[in-house]
Length: 348
View 1: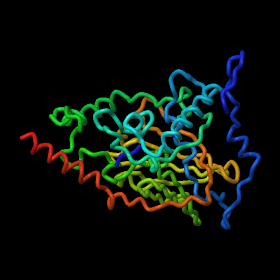
View 2: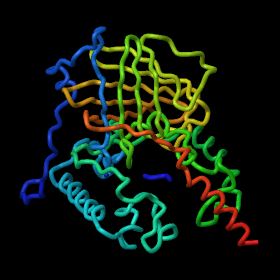
View 3: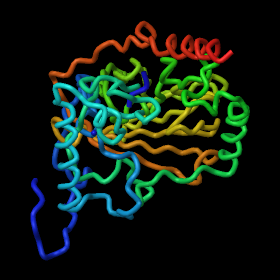
View 4: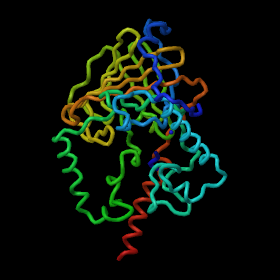
Protein backbone atom coordinates (compact mmCIF):
# COMPACT_ATOMS: atom_id res chain seq x y z
CA UNK A 1 0.00 0.00 0.00
CA UNK A 2 2.98 2.28 0.43
CA UNK A 3 3.06 4.37 -2.69
CA UNK A 4 5.01 6.51 -3.43
CA UNK A 5 6.49 13.74 -10.50
CA UNK A 6 10.22 24.51 -23.55
CA UNK A 7 12.09 22.63 -25.77
CA UNK A 8 15.84 22.92 -25.10
CA UNK A 9 17.55 25.38 -27.34
CA UNK A 10 21.15 25.61 -28.56
CA UNK A 11 23.23 28.46 -27.21
CA UNK A 12 26.90 29.33 -27.26
CA UNK A 13 26.65 31.02 -23.86
CA UNK A 14 26.34 28.98 -20.66
CA UNK A 15 22.70 28.56 -19.53
CA UNK A 16 21.68 30.94 -16.78
CA UNK A 17 19.10 30.33 -14.09
CA UNK A 18 15.75 32.02 -14.43
CA UNK A 19 15.03 34.77 -11.96
CA UNK A 20 12.42 33.82 -9.42
CA UNK A 21 10.06 36.49 -8.19
CA UNK A 22 10.42 36.71 -4.40
CA UNK A 23 7.25 35.75 -2.56
CA UNK A 24 7.64 38.74 -0.26
CA UNK A 25 7.59 41.16 -3.16
CA UNK A 26 4.50 39.54 -4.61
CA UNK A 27 2.75 39.65 -1.24
CA UNK A 28 3.37 43.40 -0.90
CA UNK A 29 1.74 44.15 -4.23
CA UNK A 30 -1.42 42.16 -3.49
CA UNK A 31 -3.77 42.55 -0.53
CA UNK A 32 -5.56 39.36 0.54
CA UNK A 33 -9.26 39.47 1.37
CA UNK A 34 -10.41 39.43 4.98
CA UNK A 35 -12.85 37.21 6.82
CA UNK A 36 -15.95 38.92 8.32
CA UNK A 37 -14.10 39.06 11.68
CA UNK A 38 -11.01 40.69 10.15
CA UNK A 39 -8.43 37.92 9.71
CA UNK A 40 -6.70 37.32 6.36
CA UNK A 41 -8.85 34.86 4.42
CA UNK A 42 -6.90 31.69 3.58
CA UNK A 43 -9.94 29.51 3.03
CA UNK A 44 -10.14 27.16 0.10
CA UNK A 45 -8.73 23.95 -1.31
CA UNK A 46 -5.01 24.17 -2.02
CA UNK A 47 -3.68 20.89 -3.47
CA UNK A 48 0.06 20.40 -3.79
CA UNK A 49 -0.30 18.31 -6.95
CA UNK A 50 1.60 20.72 -9.20
CA UNK A 51 4.76 20.22 -7.13
CA UNK A 52 4.75 16.40 -7.24
CA UNK A 53 8.08 15.32 -8.69
CA UNK A 54 10.07 18.27 -7.34
CA UNK A 55 12.77 16.61 -5.22
CA UNK A 56 12.71 17.16 -1.48
CA UNK A 57 16.48 17.53 -1.39
CA UNK A 58 18.60 19.21 -4.04
CA UNK A 59 20.98 17.35 -6.30
CA UNK A 60 24.41 18.00 -4.71
CA UNK A 61 25.79 18.99 -8.13
CA UNK A 62 23.59 22.11 -8.07
CA UNK A 63 25.27 23.47 -4.95
CA UNK A 64 23.47 26.54 -3.64
CA UNK A 65 21.54 27.21 -6.85
CA UNK A 66 17.87 27.15 -5.88
CA UNK A 67 16.57 27.66 -9.43
CA UNK A 68 17.22 25.48 -12.48
CA UNK A 69 18.93 26.75 -15.61
CA UNK A 70 17.10 26.62 -18.94
CA UNK A 71 18.95 23.42 -19.83
CA UNK A 72 18.16 21.73 -16.49
CA UNK A 73 14.53 22.76 -16.75
CA UNK A 74 14.35 21.31 -20.26
CA UNK A 75 15.67 18.01 -18.90
CA UNK A 76 12.95 18.00 -16.26
CA UNK A 77 10.35 18.65 -18.97
CA UNK A 78 11.72 15.75 -21.01
CA UNK A 79 11.52 13.38 -18.01
CA UNK A 80 7.92 14.46 -17.51
CA UNK A 81 7.12 13.62 -21.15
CA UNK A 82 8.69 10.18 -20.81
CA UNK A 83 6.67 9.50 -17.67
CA UNK A 84 3.50 10.57 -19.50
CA UNK A 85 4.34 8.07 -22.24
CA UNK A 86 4.53 5.26 -19.66
CA UNK A 87 1.35 6.43 -17.92
CA UNK A 88 -0.68 6.39 -21.12
CA UNK A 89 0.44 3.02 -22.44
CA UNK A 90 -2.46 0.66 -23.02
CA UNK A 91 -0.41 -2.15 -21.53
CA UNK A 92 2.71 -1.78 -19.41
CA UNK A 93 5.47 -4.27 -20.05
CA UNK A 94 7.91 -5.70 -17.57
CA UNK A 95 10.73 -3.39 -18.56
CA UNK A 96 8.88 -0.16 -17.87
CA UNK A 97 6.78 -1.30 -14.91
CA UNK A 98 9.64 -2.87 -12.99
CA UNK A 99 12.03 0.02 -13.56
CA UNK A 100 11.81 2.15 -10.37
CA UNK A 101 12.79 5.25 -12.35
CA UNK A 102 9.89 4.85 -14.79
CA UNK A 103 7.13 2.63 -13.51
CA UNK A 104 6.57 3.57 -9.91
CA UNK A 105 8.21 3.78 -6.52
CA UNK A 106 9.21 0.64 -4.64
CA UNK A 107 9.85 -1.64 -7.61
CA UNK A 108 12.95 -3.81 -7.75
CA UNK A 109 13.83 -6.89 -9.76
CA UNK A 110 13.01 -9.05 -6.72
CA UNK A 111 9.62 -7.49 -6.02
CA UNK A 112 8.42 -6.96 -9.58
CA UNK A 113 8.18 -9.45 -12.43
CA UNK A 114 6.09 -9.79 -15.57
CA UNK A 115 4.90 -6.24 -15.07
CA UNK A 116 3.31 -7.07 -11.70
CA UNK A 117 4.42 -4.47 -9.19
CA UNK A 118 4.19 -3.83 -5.48
CA UNK A 119 3.13 -0.30 -6.38
CA UNK A 120 -0.29 0.97 -7.40
CA UNK A 121 -1.73 1.15 -10.90
CA UNK A 122 -0.22 4.12 -12.68
CA UNK A 123 -3.56 5.91 -12.80
CA UNK A 124 -3.41 6.24 -8.99
CA UNK A 125 -0.33 8.42 -9.12
CA UNK A 126 -0.44 12.19 -9.49
CA UNK A 127 2.13 13.87 -11.70
CA UNK A 128 3.27 17.40 -11.12
CA UNK A 129 4.08 20.17 -13.55
CA UNK A 130 7.74 20.74 -14.42
CA UNK A 131 9.01 23.82 -12.59
CA UNK A 132 12.31 25.53 -11.97
CA UNK A 133 12.48 25.03 -8.19
CA UNK A 134 15.57 22.90 -7.60
CA UNK A 135 14.31 21.35 -4.36
CA UNK A 136 11.59 21.70 -1.76
CA UNK A 137 14.28 22.24 0.88
CA UNK A 138 15.35 25.89 0.62
CA UNK A 139 17.47 26.17 3.77
CA UNK A 140 20.29 25.29 4.39
CA UNK A 141 21.31 27.05 1.17
CA UNK A 142 22.49 23.80 -0.42
CA UNK A 143 18.95 22.43 -0.27
CA UNK A 144 20.03 19.39 1.77
CA UNK A 145 18.62 18.15 5.06
CA UNK A 146 21.32 18.53 7.73
CA UNK A 147 22.99 15.43 9.18
CA UNK A 148 21.57 13.73 12.27
CA UNK A 149 23.28 14.52 15.54
CA UNK A 150 25.48 11.79 17.07
CA UNK A 151 22.79 11.36 19.73
CA UNK A 152 20.10 10.76 17.09
CA UNK A 153 22.33 8.41 15.10
CA UNK A 154 22.94 6.29 18.20
CA UNK A 155 19.24 6.24 19.08
CA UNK A 156 18.36 5.13 15.54
CA UNK A 157 20.99 2.37 15.65
CA UNK A 158 19.72 1.18 19.02
CA UNK A 159 16.14 1.02 17.72
CA UNK A 160 17.20 -0.89 14.61
CA UNK A 161 19.53 -3.37 16.34
CA UNK A 162 16.89 -5.86 17.56
CA UNK A 163 15.31 -6.05 14.12
CA UNK A 164 18.66 -6.44 12.36
CA UNK A 165 19.38 -9.46 14.55
CA UNK A 166 16.31 -11.30 13.26
CA UNK A 167 16.72 -13.76 10.36
CA UNK A 168 13.82 -12.16 8.46
CA UNK A 169 15.93 -9.10 7.70
CA UNK A 170 18.02 -11.26 5.37
CA UNK A 171 15.05 -12.36 3.26
CA UNK A 172 13.88 -10.60 0.08
CA UNK A 173 10.54 -9.68 1.64
CA UNK A 174 11.97 -8.39 4.92
CA UNK A 175 10.31 -8.77 8.32
CA UNK A 176 6.57 -9.18 8.75
CA UNK A 177 6.41 -10.86 12.14
CA UNK A 178 3.84 -8.39 13.51
CA UNK A 179 2.07 -5.18 12.62
CA UNK A 180 4.89 -3.28 14.32
CA UNK A 181 7.22 -4.31 11.48
CA UNK A 182 5.15 -2.21 9.08
CA UNK A 183 5.51 1.53 8.53
CA UNK A 184 3.18 4.06 10.13
CA UNK A 185 1.74 4.70 6.66
CA UNK A 186 1.12 1.00 6.03
CA UNK A 187 -0.56 0.80 9.43
CA UNK A 188 -2.83 3.73 8.50
CA UNK A 189 -1.67 5.73 11.51
CA UNK A 190 -0.19 8.85 9.97
CA UNK A 191 2.32 10.26 7.54
CA UNK A 192 3.13 12.89 10.12
CA UNK A 193 2.68 16.65 10.11
CA UNK A 194 5.18 17.25 7.31
CA UNK A 195 4.53 14.07 5.34
CA UNK A 196 0.80 14.83 5.20
CA UNK A 197 1.33 18.06 3.28
CA UNK A 198 4.45 17.39 1.20
CA UNK A 199 3.58 16.80 -2.48
CA UNK A 200 3.74 13.05 -2.96
CA UNK A 201 2.27 10.44 -5.28
CA UNK A 202 -1.47 10.99 -4.73
CA UNK A 203 -4.10 12.46 -2.40
CA UNK A 204 -2.38 15.85 -2.30
CA UNK A 205 -5.44 17.87 -1.34
CA UNK A 206 -5.27 20.46 1.46
CA UNK A 207 -8.20 22.49 2.71
CA UNK A 208 -8.27 25.48 5.05
CA UNK A 209 -11.39 26.48 6.98
CA UNK A 210 -11.60 29.42 9.37
CA UNK A 211 -13.79 30.54 12.24
CA UNK A 212 -13.17 33.30 14.82
CA UNK A 213 -10.17 32.18 16.88
CA UNK A 214 -9.68 28.92 14.97
CA UNK A 215 -8.13 27.64 11.75
CA UNK A 216 -8.79 24.10 10.53
CA UNK A 217 -6.28 22.43 8.21
CA UNK A 218 -7.40 19.25 6.43
CA UNK A 219 -4.91 17.03 4.64
CA UNK A 220 -6.35 14.45 2.27
CA UNK A 221 -3.51 12.00 2.89
CA UNK A 222 -4.67 9.63 5.65
CA UNK A 223 -7.48 12.10 6.33
CA UNK A 224 -5.57 14.22 8.88
CA UNK A 225 -7.33 17.25 10.38
CA UNK A 226 -5.73 19.80 12.69
CA UNK A 227 -7.94 22.21 14.61
CA UNK A 228 -5.56 25.08 15.35
CA UNK A 229 -6.50 27.61 18.07
CA UNK A 230 -5.32 31.16 17.42
CA UNK A 231 -3.57 33.08 20.20
CA UNK A 232 -3.79 30.36 22.83
CA UNK A 233 -0.92 28.66 24.71
CA UNK A 234 0.16 25.08 24.09
CA UNK A 235 -1.27 22.25 26.14
CA UNK A 236 0.80 20.72 28.94
CA UNK A 237 4.06 19.18 27.74
CA UNK A 238 3.01 15.79 29.10
CA UNK A 239 0.22 15.59 26.49
CA UNK A 240 1.82 14.31 23.28
CA UNK A 241 0.51 12.98 19.98
CA UNK A 242 1.52 11.81 16.51
CA UNK A 243 1.15 15.23 14.86
CA UNK A 244 1.76 17.30 17.98
CA UNK A 245 -0.03 20.30 19.44
CA UNK A 246 -0.50 23.19 17.00
CA UNK A 247 -1.09 26.82 17.99
CA UNK A 248 -1.39 29.74 15.60
CA UNK A 249 -1.01 33.50 15.48
CA UNK A 250 -1.03 36.16 12.77
CA UNK A 251 2.00 38.13 11.62
CA UNK A 252 0.50 40.63 9.22
CA UNK A 253 -1.13 38.59 6.46
CA UNK A 254 0.80 35.41 7.37
CA UNK A 255 -0.64 32.63 9.52
CA UNK A 256 2.16 31.26 11.70
CA UNK A 257 1.55 27.83 13.24
CA UNK A 258 3.90 26.44 15.88
CA UNK A 259 3.66 22.73 16.69
CA UNK A 260 5.30 20.99 19.64
CA UNK A 261 4.42 18.05 21.93
CA UNK A 262 5.21 15.24 19.47
CA UNK A 263 5.19 11.73 20.87
CA UNK A 264 8.30 9.54 21.04
CA UNK A 265 7.43 7.68 17.82
CA UNK A 266 6.79 10.66 15.56
CA UNK A 267 8.88 10.65 12.41
CA UNK A 268 9.88 13.47 10.08
CA UNK A 269 11.69 12.40 6.93
CA UNK A 270 12.19 8.91 8.43
CA UNK A 271 13.91 10.29 11.53
CA UNK A 272 12.26 9.85 14.92
CA UNK A 273 12.11 13.29 16.52
CA UNK A 274 12.86 14.10 20.14
CA UNK A 275 10.86 15.83 22.85
CA UNK A 276 12.56 19.08 21.80
CA UNK A 277 11.10 19.07 18.26
CA UNK A 278 9.43 22.29 17.14
CA UNK A 279 7.84 22.85 13.73
CA UNK A 280 6.91 26.36 12.55
CA UNK A 281 4.68 26.70 9.47
CA UNK A 282 3.91 29.93 7.63
CA UNK A 283 0.92 30.29 5.28
CA UNK A 284 0.89 33.44 3.11
CA UNK A 285 -1.41 34.22 0.20
CA UNK A 286 0.69 35.88 -2.49
CA UNK A 287 -2.12 36.25 -5.02
CA UNK A 288 -5.73 35.15 -5.47
CA UNK A 289 -4.76 31.57 -6.34
CA UNK A 290 -1.39 31.01 -4.66
CA UNK A 291 -0.68 30.13 -1.03
CA UNK A 292 3.01 30.12 -0.18
CA UNK A 293 3.81 27.37 2.34
CA UNK A 294 7.01 27.55 4.38
CA UNK A 295 7.89 25.21 7.23
CA UNK A 296 10.97 25.10 9.47
CA UNK A 297 11.87 22.00 11.46
CA UNK A 298 13.92 22.56 14.60
CA UNK A 299 15.14 19.73 16.80
CA UNK A 300 18.65 20.17 18.25
CA UNK A 301 18.60 16.60 19.55
CA UNK A 302 17.89 15.15 16.09
CA UNK A 303 19.47 17.40 13.43
CA UNK A 304 22.64 19.43 13.61
CA UNK A 305 20.77 22.56 12.49
CA UNK A 306 17.20 23.61 11.57
CA UNK A 307 16.00 23.10 7.99
CA UNK A 308 13.26 24.70 5.93
CA UNK A 309 10.93 23.56 3.15
CA UNK A 310 9.03 26.01 0.94
CA UNK A 311 6.73 25.64 -2.06
CA UNK A 312 3.54 27.17 -3.48
CA UNK A 313 0.08 25.63 -3.17
CA UNK A 314 -2.38 26.47 -5.96
CA UNK A 315 -6.09 27.01 -5.35
CA UNK A 316 -8.34 24.58 -7.21
CA UNK A 317 -12.06 25.17 -6.81
CA UNK A 318 -12.80 21.92 -8.69
CA UNK A 319 -10.66 19.69 -6.46
CA UNK A 320 -12.57 17.37 -4.15
CA UNK A 321 -11.09 15.83 -1.02
CA UNK A 322 -12.20 12.22 -0.75
CA UNK A 323 -12.25 10.15 2.40
CA UNK A 324 -9.00 8.29 2.88
CA UNK A 325 -10.58 5.05 4.11
CA UNK A 326 -7.24 3.51 4.96
CA UNK A 327 -8.17 0.88 7.53
CA UNK A 328 -11.22 -0.22 5.56
CA UNK A 329 -9.18 -0.95 2.44
CA UNK A 330 -5.89 -1.97 4.00
CA UNK A 331 -5.47 -5.36 2.37
CA UNK A 332 -1.71 -4.87 2.48
CA UNK A 333 -1.51 -5.51 6.23
CA UNK A 334 -3.50 -8.73 6.00
CA UNK A 335 -1.64 -9.93 2.93
CA UNK A 336 1.82 -9.10 4.29
CA UNK A 337 1.30 -10.86 7.62
CA UNK A 338 -0.56 -13.90 6.29
CA UNK A 339 1.86 -14.20 3.38
CA UNK A 340 4.80 -14.24 5.79
CA UNK A 341 3.12 -16.99 7.85
CA UNK A 342 2.59 -19.01 4.66
CA UNK A 343 6.26 -18.61 3.74
CA UNK A 344 7.25 -19.83 7.21
CA UNK A 345 5.13 -22.96 6.85
CA UNK A 346 6.56 -23.64 3.42
CA UNK A 347 10.09 -23.38 4.81
CA UNK A 348 9.49 -25.79 7.68
